[in-house]
Length: 179
Image (cartoon, rainbow, N blue to C red):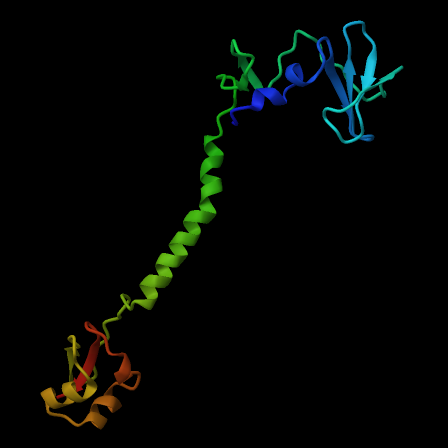
């Protein structure tokens, strides 16, 4: 709440003895009552403006009584400032707080799953066919190096691993090497 919000209230803006008693949404006008009981009308669309005296308020205007407190405001300080209500009669909204945060958490989970998938942490261990042995790629390995270390031809290594893309080898990948 702003520092000067108490100056946006009726007690500061209206002449002494004037009180806002209603609002007509059809015409967009506020209605006020003075000490002597006369009814005044504000300019269309303005909360505080030059007022003109009227004889009667529209039928839909319900005047607030003096003994009913404003439900949006709390206690009044000595300097006239009225803060928002902090009473215990307010309904707690704890059940809705998770509902508001749910889309945020859902986006975070989707992004984390996407990062997990793109970083390749979902390497499936597959069984190698008969006549071959599994080998794990280490940092710096190329298809040529793996074929040379295991003493096989590069074409035989690629034929045994049809989905293998040599330019995308990562440490920890498992490939099948001819025995």
